[in-house]
Structures are given as structure tokens and as C-alpha cells.
Image (cartoon, rainbow, N blue to C red; front, top):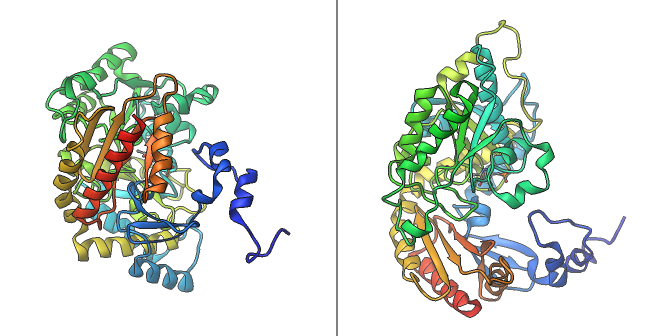
Length: 449
Ligand code: PLP
């Protein structure tokens, strides 16, 4: 059955393509597999097979804000694995999972006090959409089947999330599998009016009125939920204009439409508050989360649900399963133990406050690049920022890939989507590391444009 671990050459195997990598230019990787193997990680750095230490500029995929190899997380994982490695989550559960649900509910806005666990952000989104459909049906409003997403939104890769998502290349191939009746709000990115804004753009709250347009078009009685990322992450840190989310909340409330915040990247401190809902002072009806809940160490996601939505499900026959939904690994004890350790560390080291205190450092550093040749826009909020690079007109996206490759040679593990570079460094970064990261990136951008 293949070579022994000591003889195994991962670069050679990677070059064959047996391992089909996710969201990856696989043929490009196969040409230079040696540079793509991360063999260890500690703190804010990933170490590659060829010996480089790469600063983890996006905290993995927005998921490791506490850095890698935290001894308290490792210890919690080992202890849980020795005590209870797995148990069914259907009709039974375990103390670590129940405790984590309590703690997440306590962190969330007051009205959101029930937690349903999943294993990923995609599953969290599909779960929230199903809760919305079930809620309306149980209240006798089954006609509210329509889900509204937003252009440029990313909600994962399940058919639900893909349908409400608004990233065209992700949707194109799967059009035949989309949910019925989905529509999309216009996005809020305004390169003409709000380029190089720091934090929330001042103008643009009225873009929320686009929901009134969809209500007019489809009738509110057909719309079940609106799902938005409070800050759009995957398409490059698109920050909501001041007042936009409040307005969306008001319109949803007025028309009986549920508002779901997809906080898979904003949840657990990225904006300096537990959730973006608190940072922006807007309480949705559900919040989806994943990633940083376990610092990326064991997969976990979930949905925070408003009390009366939960109670609506609790009204049927006493012994019935109220919500025919769940995953074999929902509330996995290892993930829950890690989640509890993460919250312990966050509390003891005050890490959400640390993220907030680093916000001006990152803001200053990225905006120092303002209007350098080849840069079209820079946006930032919390410990997150994005830089739009002028595309090569003959090959959009090529400069992003080139910068990614150059990053590997210059000690940066970057995340480029198309020609946009997103930054979401670990909360444990030092101010100097943030300045160095942006300084190197600025030089790389100048090289390719
Ligand atoms: N929702 C948002 C806002 C995300 O950013 C992501 C992933 O980046 C997802 C959902 C999907 O999460 P996962 O990749 O864990 O399925």
C-alpha cells in the first residue's frame, strides 16, 4: 500500500495530482510542489518543507487568530481525546459541548441564546437557511420560501450557501443545482465614492433600500430571510457603510423577514468585539459562525438562534424530533474541548481587546500605501484589510497569483482572490510584524504592477 512514511516524498506525490486540492490552481501547484508543503507551524508562522518561515497574513483562512500550537489548546485536545474522543450527538451529548454552547450564547447579543452546532461555515449557513424555512412553516407562513443574499457575498459551498452567495465564478458551474426563488441585494462596494476609506464608508446606507425593491418585486410574504456577511470577507473586506446594517434590520423587521448575519469570519473577535453584531450595534435573528471558534484546530461551525425562533420549533408533540437536521459530528467533543480552551485563552489574555488595539496599527500601515501606482483601493476594519491591485488587462487574476508566489519567497503566506490581497493577521501579532508584513507586500505589489 504505497511507500512507508520515511520513504514518502510528498512533493513528488503532489506533482502527480492524486491529491486534488480545494480552491486551488492545481496545475500551477504541480509545477512547484516543493514550495507548497507546510510541515509545521508555531505562533504566527508556518514553516514550509523547503525551510522558510512564512508570516500567516490571513490567520490560515481567517481561522487561527490565536496563532498555531498554543500549548493550552494542545493540552485540552489531548485530554479530551483521552477522556471522550467521540459520542453520538443525536439524543445524547457530552459536557464539553453543552458548556461551549452556554459560553457562546453568553458572548452573543442577548436575544440570541440557542446554539446549533455544525462542522463548517457552509453547513452553518445551510442550517440557518433551513431553520428560517422551518420557522416560517411552523408559523403557518410556508409561502416565505425565498432567500435573499447579496452580490459578492460568500456563504460557503453547499447548495444553500452557493445559492445565496454572489461570487459569479463560484456559482457558474452549478447553476442547475441552485435553490428556487433566491434573489440578491446589490453589494455595497463603491470604488468611485468610497475608495481608500478607513473603516466604515460615510455614504451608502441607502443601499439597504435595495431590499425594499426586492420586497416590491417579490412581495414580502414570499421572503423568508436575508443573509449577509456584516463585512464581506472573501471578496476583499467590503465594509458596510455607516447605518447600512441598521437600515437592513429595520426593513426586515417591518416585513417579517429574518435577518441572518454570516459571521463565519467576523465572529470571535476579528472586529474587536465577540461578533460584528456588537461592533455595529445591530442584532440579527441568527448568526452563523465557524473558523475561529476553535482557532481552526478542529473543524466546527454553528448557528446562534433567537429565543422565539427556537421556541417556535418546541411547540410540536412532546416526544417528536423538532428539527430533522444535524450532522454525525455536530457538537464533536474534541472541537468543543478546543472551543472551551479558546474562550479560556481569549478571556485570560484579553485577545479581543488586543485585536481592537491593533486595528489602528494595521490601518495606518495599509493606508500608507494609498494611491501607490498599481493600487486601486484599500479598505480596512478591525484586524482586517484588503488591497485591490490593478489587474493586468490581458490576464485578470494573474497579478494576484504572482504576488502569492512572490510572498512565498519573501516570508509571507498571502491570500489573493483575483487581484485582491486580503489581510487578517493573528491577534497575537506584534505592531512591528504588521508593519513589516505591509512593507514587504507594498514592495511585492510594486514589482508586479
Ligand atoms: N461564510 C463565510 C462568510 C465564509 O467566509 C466562509 C468561508 O470562508 C464560509 C461561510 C464557508 O465556511 P467553510 O469553508 O468552513 O465551509
